[in-house]
Length: 434
Ligand code: ASP
Image 1 (cartoon, rainbow, N blue to C red):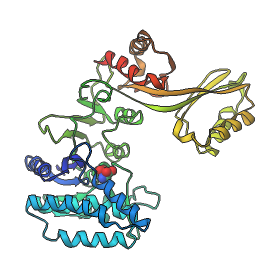
Image 2: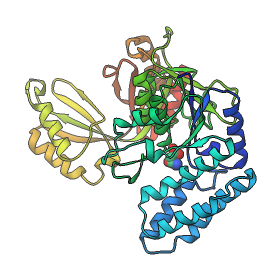
Image 3: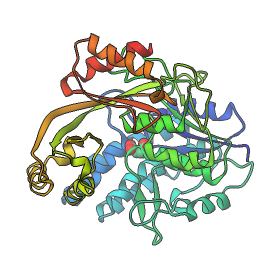
Image 4: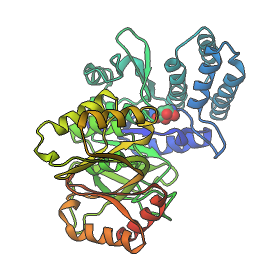
């Protein structure tokens, strides 16, 4: 099917003017037949996202407080959109029904999902397309994973050459209960629809012109990456880049459907295209990502590399304490483990005690809080000259590096620096890329 699935994020459908822009984007290419939408997002910095308001409604309701106050803000937003677009004759009734359901104890997932439900209903009417409820085609298991039958349901429901609008962010379980994805999950819906209809392209329309080479809050005017592979995108997402939902990559990457991240405010900008393979330059440094919030632990034990079960004992202790190691580097007599600070917050003492007792190590200590920064690019770790330039950039800026990891992925080089040096380090590394 030579169709394009286009997903529009919350800022792209924040008000009636933005929705008109969305419609002109959809109409400018006849292949854009399948549209997935988020709930209206922020119109300005201090504004509230519809999804946040709906979660608030549920919270108030579940505490026995009246929900009408917060829900009236939701109503206002949709009424304004429908009035300005001259549509939504049934909106009032639908809003009333939703409010009643929330008052009588609807789940948080049902309540939150109504943001995308209403938005898709209005857009479908304005566009003259058919509305398809995600609850009928996106089937989720109790643990939140996507049921395999979803792709068939989507494929069977969608007819060639017809136009559809589908709400993002939710699906339903086998007994019909609404279940939402994690926040930002409309990206996943778009990816599932693209895969289920075997689309030729998955366009993801947002408010930035693609994936940027670095975090714009730290680096001034980073340029968008023009082409990137799924693998590189996974690495960037793992290290903190957050334009596209991490879980949305798999449905499309497995089928080799390219993703194009575009900006609704600059529809002519080509954005970033994410593909299976791309031509690799001799300087394969595509982008930088990073985040703070890691703790580094040092474990010393003479000849640990000769103890067959040392690593498996370490993993058992981490697993029993429900801690997922982010990185492990092992030497002959010592190793370092990087853990998420937030994850170990309430269990650090127990964990340290268990490590000391059961590993019988000479020395175990927490080395401090670190930020992890990654330089990502296809095959970058096989280019020692890039590693050396990056390391020099950090050292020349007077920064001390507590970890360099080059072996665990071919497509990234990782640096651990003191948490307080995060921004300075990102800027120093960016100079090598710019
Ligand atoms: N509206 C949901 C959220 O705010 C889902 C999405 O926008 O993708 O997280």
